[in-house]
Amino acid sequence: MGRLAIIGGSGFTTLAGLEILSRRAVSTPYGTTSAALVEGRLAGAPVVFLPRHGDHHGIPPHRINYRANIRALADAGADDVIALAAVGGIAPAFRPGALCVPDQLVDYTSDRAHTFHDGDAPGDEVVHIDFTRPYCPTLRQELVQAGTAAGIDVLDGGTYAATQGPRLETAAEIVRLERDGCDLVGMTGMPEAALARELGLCYASLAFVVNWGAGKAAGAIGMDEIHANLALCSADVLRLLGALAAGRARAAGA
Ligand code: HPA
Image (cartoon, rainbow, N blue to C red; front, side, top):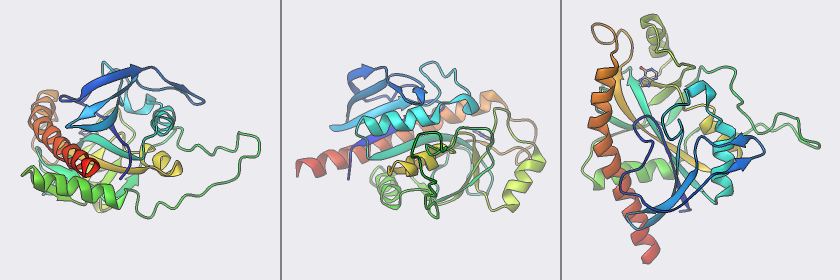
């Protein structure tokens, strides 16, 4: 078990319950992070927090500097990274309000800086990371167990479709993703997960469903619906993270 970082997604520009000890702006060889890194304690466990979309949720998915964010977390000493992600549900079990810990992904994004190994640096070698299992099994398990400890139902597994955004999908695109075997859809899961793997970080996602994927429910997807479900999920996400952090604090004190 290593030092924990949490990347906040939509609905999590701050992390309620985090006792903040420091806040520092960071720049990396890849540019600046989405926001200052916040270091603090959650339920007694040290945590580094970074809101992916910036302090005011102003950075859209395709403009996030994923490389700077992941590099900065690694430089801050993070070993384990929990990525929070608001998603749309595709498969029937992935209904609005559900929490899930995906175990696979399919990448549909394009034109994002998606590797630290572009061949630009002198002496850089071609690197092909293994990505058979894109999420860290031990951190996934810890998230699922924290859900059990907190009395929250968590869907253990599922295939995450990473789309380019910022628009939501068409109904036909959701049918295609379903045919591809995807259970949930979001816009920020890649290249974040692959970059974390390139740096040897243990990365897992805690996703929460804020709407049915396009065409899965009658009518258009409304922001009111998304915000209402975000509020519904936030309490469970925070309780689960609190349980996970408390478990870590206990283990460290033992
Ligand atoms: N599609 C893609 N990303 C999302 C969705 C969606 O329906 N909901 C929240 N993030």
